[in-house]
Image (cartoon, rainbow, N blue to C red):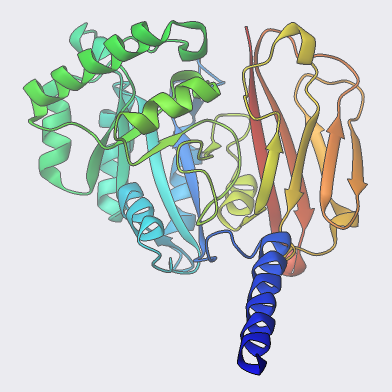
Length: 348
C-alpha cells in the first residue's frame, strides 16, 4: 500500500510537470536558432518598383552579407537543419529569387557567384517555356546549376492565385510544373513558394500532403524551429523596402515564437474581414507591453490588447480590400534587434 501511494504521488508529479510544460509553451519544439530569408524578384528593372531592387541596392546587400557577421546558407540546408533538430549558426540568412526573370541571370547571379553566396531560384515553368527575353531559359538555369551554389525551388507552372483556384486545378498545375522540372533538369524541387505569397489553409495542407519539405510566403518574419514549415515567412525586397538599413534590420531580426494563431485560415470571407487576429506568445519572450502591430492598407492604427500574461488580440478598424493584406507585429529587444511576426491574409 505504501509503495502504491508513493508510485501514485510520482505519477501525479509527472503529470503536473507535463501540464506546466504545455501551459508555458515548452512543449513546442526546442529553439535551435533562427534565419532571415530574403526574397527578390527582379534586379535593375526600375519600371517594376514593387518587385525590383536597384543594382546599387543589390550590391549594398551583398557587401553587408560578406562583412563577416552573417552565415549565408542554402535555403534547403536551413530547412534540413531545423527538421533534424540541429542548431543553426548565429546570424544565419538565406537568399531566394522568385519567378525566373532574366535579370536573375544577367545581374544577380554574376554578383552573388563572385561573392560566394548561395541562393534558391523558385521557378514558374510556364514563363520559362514561353521563351521570352524577359524570362530565363532552361539553358541558363542549367548553367547556373552547373556553376554551383544555386538550387531550384518549385513555384508552380502558371503562377496561379492558389486560394481562388479549385484544388484540382492547383494539383494539375503543380504536376505539370513537376513534369517540366524532371524533363529539363532531371529532378523535382523539394521546396515550394506560393505564387504571390497567397495561400489558404487548404493550400497549405495540400502542399504538405504532396511531400514538399517546406513552403514559403511573402510575409515578413523569421524562420525558426517552432514555425510552421508550410507557411514560412520571407523578407521581400524592392526599391522602396530595399535600403541597406532595412536590410540590416531584417538580417538581424529575432523570431516571435507564438502558438494558437487565429484565424487558422488566412483566406478571409466577408463575415470575418477584418479578421479577429490573435496569438499566444511563448513565455520565453518578455516585455510584451512594448509590442506594436501594424496593418497594411489601414489609415487608422490597429488596436492591440493583451489578455493575461501572453495572449495578444489585434483588431483593425476597417476591412482589408481585395488582394493580399498583412499584419506585422514587432517587439524591440536589447542590442537594437527586433522580434517580428508577420501574417498574410488573402481577400478574394
